[in-house]
Image 1: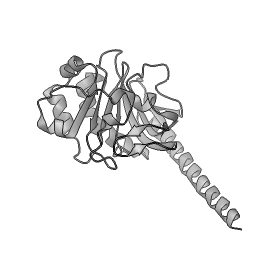
Image 2: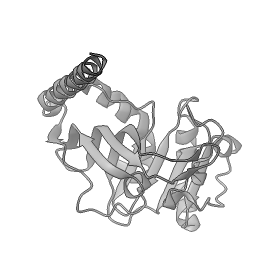
Image 3: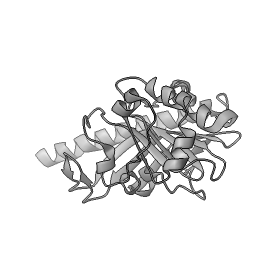
Length: 235
């Protein structure tokens, strides 16, 4: 009897999760055109492009995309539900190694960049919910191992963020005082993470959680000041 109850419980939980996902997918599909997007469902928006540098994609496994929205110019991608697995054995400073497949979830906002127009870099907050005091460059993600010796001239930026890159000259070129200020102006309690590749400018943060269509615009408003400074009118 106990086994039957347990099986029934997990079946109900699974059905409820499926139902929520279906309702969410229907809501995004219905709102896509009105918001200026094309609904791509579960298709990877990064297929066929250069994603090297986007370690969230390249250094993680079992990627699942839900409710992908691409603007009608093809220059902006919103992924309300992106699910991935951390590889077993990954070392995370202060947290030990991953001993089992760990499922993670994020909402993503990505802007298509003219090929090769941006240096390859990552910017991430020094502290975050669940990761306070743990610099992400110690997590063993391949693209985060080289912390740049780039002086932005802002003690507040240096206190809150870490830049990781192998192209220090390129980063110094794009990190203007206005861009530094756009990072500093982000909410204090945040884990904003920015990654670039030859083709993409990618944002994610636990506080950028897109659960319904009306969450899209606030997410874009949050990251657009940074994207506009890096990409100009394309953002």
